[in-house]
Image 1 (tube, rainbow over the protein chains, first blue to last red):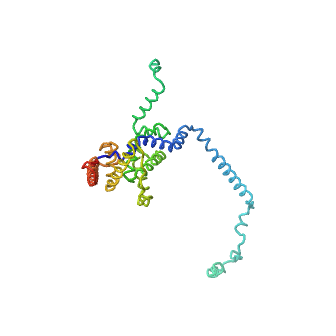
Image 2: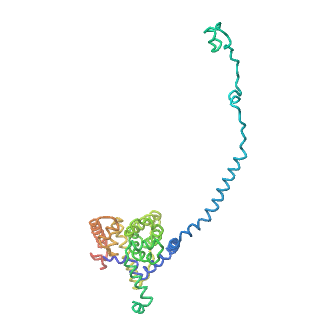
Image 3: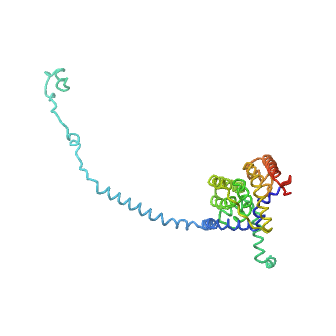
Amino acid sequence: MPMEALDPGASDPRFWARFHVRAMEQAQAELGRRQAYARLTIPEVVFSWRRTLVPTALMAAALAGILLLGQGEASVPLSPLALEEALTQDLVVEPIPSILGRGDELDEPVFLHLVGGF
Amino acid sequence: MPFLLRGLNKKAFRRVRVSALIERTDGDLVTAALRGDTRAFGVLVKRYMRPGYLVALSVTGNAEDAEDVAQEAFLVALERLEDCRDRERFGGWFLTIVRNRARNLLRRERLRRGEGLSPEIVSGTGGPDVDLKRLELREQLERGMEGLSEVRREVLLLHDLEGWKHREIAERLGMPDGTVRSHLHFARRHLRGYLEGLPGRTPSGEES
């Protein structure tokens, strides 16, 4: 079967040479990029980060400074309270019935009424 | 040793280097191309431009589209070269890219193909009559292949036009050897039958 008719190179002998040239022209940019990456050294890679790394570090430092300064102004010094004052502050206190001074006249039911409200 | 080298000129050195490159495996060439080696990529293009074109033709059925698809596929393959996991099987991976791009083009341009653009006449060395006959034969072959499945077209073109062996096709397309032979047998039979049915053609498809 005359399959060669499907080969464009059969009717145009320079077809495949032109195809190759065009493919290589299109690939030039990508090949150049790969060559550049292959030549990079470690110091060059680190140095290339300077454009993003340095401004980011400066911004982070500024933000941290602002936050720390803000915390310092908002704090109020606390006054130490004596323990008794702290325990009894704002309490509504009723006088405890003085039952210690009474003698044997205070029997059990009266005691419970006076103290526990029973 | 230096007196041996003195006799060789720069061109001879370059020829030796280029021929050494051509003998390298796909894996070696891909490894070099990953680093941007232009010569290594050039050898890969030379090695797969015809199979790529034929696979694209088997999908699109159109010579101009096949050429565009094959060209673009090389750039796509270079950009995604890291995705080629088995570098020794670059051929199969590349042809998969060609196939996918050709199918995408078909989907986008169904309407254009339906309108049936008339093919341009390519001027060759045989004069206008030979060009027309060749063009006519090409059209007949393309029409005959429309009756084949995509995979059978691909097998037929890679074997009969590109000269690949059954085992090579089986490996690159990811199918058993026997399946390749079967596809080839049916594809040839169908195409032969189509050409025989055309007026003015002998049983072998030659012009009477």
